[in-house]
Every structure is written in structure tokens, then in C-alpha cells.
Image 1 (cartoon, each protein chain N blue to C red):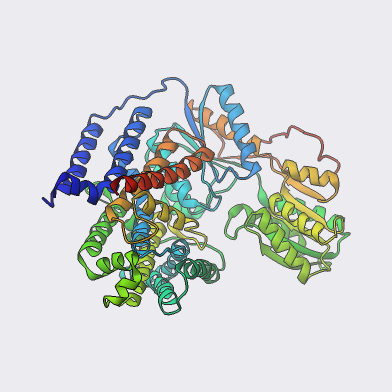
Image 2 (cartoon, each protein chain N blue to C red):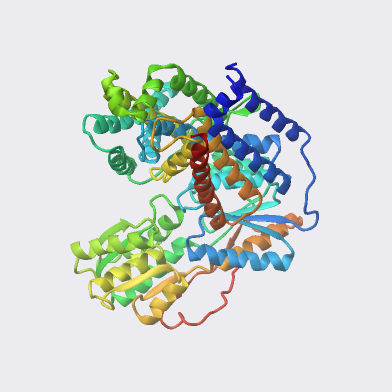
Length: 325
Length: 315
């Protein structure tokens, strides 16, 4: 009698297998391409903007756009699962903002094998890892983050008149985006003897950690005069810490991404500036290029999206960004 | 065994299985991409990491404990394993190191809970932070990547079209089922979870077996770390965040009671598959990730509600 307990799962398994073998192979949507946009997360206004740009382009071109993202920005394995599932879904092209520059490579290789073109957006793939794995991408669409770091540094130095104590809030170590912004910033600042970097710590891209970490920095380095953060979310946390210390307006805070809330802060004077990246442009260009690719047209290996410094002068204007090709 | 006995014995797991099949049928109707051999293998592969961690979690929860440190142990074992691989230590030894690091962290949990008399929640919460910090310290916050194809075979390889992680998962479940039903460790786990004092009085060396259970959970986290590292070709100190919640969810959906003393390993596999199928299906359907989180949370709540209702009926 004991064997009884195994019979039902077996029957069910057999049934499932039968269903599978007579599975249905037909495609539902015959007309129009299906293009997927896989982002790091949707918990960041930056990616919401990107989604908006992609959706606008998608509806204009008659594309069936699927937008997916992992629950958390750091979850590289979830992102890989999403890409695998989209390969099963037989989408025509995948646009992806890698959660990890190296960790995305196995997923890219899988898409390559399935013959699905990959367009990389915003965050670069590690070139050496990609080459070693024999993977290839159709194009990269994004801003030059090193250049953005330089622009932020130059503005910050100008506001400090060339000397002062500066703190930095970094992104997650090993993230290409944050590392590039940081290296651009250092490229300018390290040559200036008047600029003293008193602290450089990670707040893991997060707003609440930006608050906590900068509060600690304010405790240990009360003389700090300026702050550069690798993203606006961390800056928005930090200005709350500055407010809590009763020092609003004392410090020059320069962020990155020019989020709507950061623009607001710049107009109010709690932040000095931010570097704008135009994520909605990235989303739009990604979808447009995927469309071109699927129509057999050539796309450039790299499509730079312009970056600009946002300060009090232009924070209010909703300038449509120009795109350099 | 009469049909009534059967239902009494496997009723809960049977209900979970019906749930999984219902889900499969719904997805089969909604999307043609779901019920294909390649997608089912894809789901099985994606489920394997959570399913393996959930085996350890099932043992722990049967003893009426909890292990919140599994995700951090995945990260710490992963980075230690990765550095061993990069130091050109032979593959089998590096893999052993990964398992031993996991088992060690788990045993520390076990010793703190038994000899230190800490509640499992506190001890493993502490370990969650300690192991995460250790992983970050060990790597300076940076991922370690790039391994030999021999190592990567553990995630990318296939035997008779079946992905290697799926084979590992099945082996783990077979062994775990035997351990839980046929060995002292398994029987005492139920006894401890059912009534710890009674177990002590009847001469079970509760401390030893409890520590072993946490060690097992840690070791399986180490095994999951091996597959994860091979899969991503990279070990990240921030890997495995919130894995504990996925593993607890799979265990609970599978019918293991958080009060301890009852649960079955096959139920946990079905629970892990429900979560994997749900995520996969929602991706295939192009459902927004906000909705996905809500759906998965609801499924956990509904599963436990059903469990409680079934229990009442049986009484």
C-alpha cells in the first residue's frame, strides 16, 4: 500500500508530459515586433523615465514592448532569469541595462545562441568578459559617465574657488556606472592641490544610506564644504542629513542623474547642481535602434546620449535634450 | 494505506501539487511559450538555487527554528570559493571549501542556538549580518569573476538535455527525503520540533542534532553558492540578498508548519516550483514587476490560509 503515495504525482507528471508533447507552437501576435526592455529596477525614477521614452517610441512604431525589471537593483541573478524567460518568450530583440557589467555576460551569450539581438543601454558590459565568453552585442546606447564625472568635478571646483574639503558618496563598488563617474571626478580633482578629499564612502545607490553615511561623515569631518554623490538619490538623502545638522545651504552638493526631485532641490538651493543623463532618450533610442536592426538596417556600434550640467539657471526649464550621433 | 490515511498523510502536499498544476494549466492557456520542454527545463534550472536552500530551511523549520542567514552564507561561501578557484586550487578542493565554509557558518548558528541558548531568530539574524560583512570585507566590496569552463559546467552543462543544476537539485531532494524519513537526524528533527522537552526526556541528544540541522542548512547554502557562482561566472559579496525569504516561502507553501514538528521535503520542492513557475509565467506574460511582487506575496498568504483551513477540517 505504501507505494500508493507515489502514484498520483506520477500520473500527474505523465499528464503534464502529454500536454507538453502536444504543446502548441503557434505564435499569437503575427504583426509587429516584440521588443523587451530589461532594466535594473523600477524603484528608481531614472528607470521610470527610461521606460517612458521606450514606451513612446514603441507605440509610435507599432511595437509590442515588454518592460521587465528585477525587484532589487543588485539582483543580477533575477535579471538573468528575466532574460532567460524572454528568450523562451521568443521576443525579437532585448534591450538591457546590466545590473552587473560582468554578470550579465552569460545571459547575453544565451540570447546570442537563440539569435536574439541584444542592445545594451546605460551601463556598459565588461568588454574583456564579453570577448572571452564569445558574446556580442548589437550596440551600446548611453552617456559617457567619465565625462559626466569630469563635468561635475569642474563645476564643484569652480564653486569652491579651487580649494576646500570635499566628501564623496560612491555607488556600489564594481558597478561600471558609479566607477566611471568616480574616475572622471578624480581625474579632475586629483590634479588640484587645493582640493582635499576627506571622505569617500559608498551609500550603495540608496537614499536612506545616503542620509546615514553622510550624517556620519558630517560628524567625523565637520569642516567638509562640498559633496559629490554618484547618484541623485544618495544626494537627496545627504541633503536631509545636512538639514538635520542645521547646515542647509552651507554645503555645495553636486549629484548625478538630474532627477525631478533633484531639480527641485537645485531650485530651492539645497543642492548646487546635478549632471543630466536623459534616460527617456536612452529608452527611446534603444527601441528605435532595435526596430532598425529588425528591419535589416545597420545601427552604429555605439550611440552616445548627451549629458549636461543642471544648475539653478536651467533646472526649471524642461529642455528637450539634443542627441548627438 | 487506505485513501483516508493517504489524505491524512499527504493531504497538504497533495493540495500544493493541485495548486502547482492549476498554475501550470492557467499559464498554458494564457501563453503558448510556457508549456514547452525548453521552458520547463528553464524553470527547473531557475528554481534549483532556491529549492536547494529551501531543503535546509525545511529541516530547520521542522525543528521549530528559522534560518535568516542563508542568503548571506551564499554570498560568503561564494566569494571564498571564487578566491580559491582563482588561486588555482584544484576544482574538487575548491568546491569542498565552498561547502565547508557554508557548513561552518551554519554550525556556528547551531552552537549559538543550543549551547548559547540564543533564539534561532536572533542567532541567524546576527549571522546574516556577520557573513554579509565578512563577504564584503573579504572582497573589498568587489565581485570576483572569471572561472574555468570546468567549474562553469556545474551551471551551464547538460546531461541528456537536463541542466546540471537540475540534476544536483534532484539528487539533493532524494537524499534529503531519505535523511528526513529514514535516519535518526530526520526523525529527531520532527521530535524536537513537535515537543522539544519530550525529546530531551526521551534521551535524544537535542543539542547535537539541532546543531547538525543548522550545519546542514549552511552547507546547502554553500552548495547553492557554487551553482550561483558558476551560473553568473562571478561571485558577488552582495549576492543572495533576501534569499532567506524565498526559501522560507517555498518551505511554507510546501506545507511545513512554522510551529515545527511537521513538513515534507517533497512539499518544499513543489513550493519552490510554484514560486519559480509563477515568476517565469509572469515574465512570459510581460506583467510589470510591481504586480509580480504583489502576486507572489498573495500566493504565500493564500497557501498558508489554505493550510490552516485544511488542518481544521482534518481535526
